[in-house]
Amino acid sequence: RKEVEQDPGPFNVPEGATVAFNCTYSNSASQSFFWYRQDCRKEPKLLMSVYSSGNEDGRFTAQLNRASQYISLLIRDSKLSDSATYLCVVNTKTGNQFYFGTGTSLTVIP
Amino acid sequence: NAGVTQTPKFQVLKTGQSMTLQCAQDMNHNSMYWYRQDPGMGLRLIYYSASEGTTDKGEVPNGYNVSRLNKREFSLRLESAAPSQTSVYFCASTVGGGETQYFGPGTRLLVL
Image (cartoon, rainbow over all chains, first blue to last red; front, top):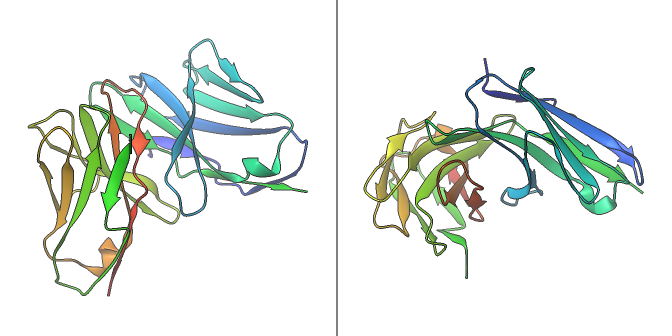
């Protein structure tokens, strides 16, 4: 079983739409959770960390459900510039390793 | 402050050739990582170095070696390249302890 699983999409949504991505992780000892964004042929860049109480950064909201081992990302009022691949990332501090999902592709259509 | 830098950006090798991918960070980070990214596979960890002087295998270490030269530099060596090693290679660093990773721009490697 993969450490982190994501729906690969693709998600094609109109500008202004709300879209949600989900991610599940297999290791209950996981400690840190992140969403990264990766543009075509570029390196991944941190979008936001995910905290137990949930957190929001502008149009982006991340949620963590430890009981279900589930992470989500909600994007409101989608912009063309949101088109990218979104990577779910989990860290198990004891191993100092980060595990990446395969990514969810989003295209925002004018 | 350049962040994480990688050289080269692109490389074409013939099967059996060797090469070293270079990575350096100027953020005084303790931990450094090498990943490969293949279509449909996501990023997979090759090797990592939790701190200067230590290295550990990741998920896909076969065919690779690493050197943590000092706190700033972490190199990845392919001793005898194979077509299966055609990939995009990313170096990353973090302060440590599961904190945010910062990535280099990547090296695109083609092995013929």
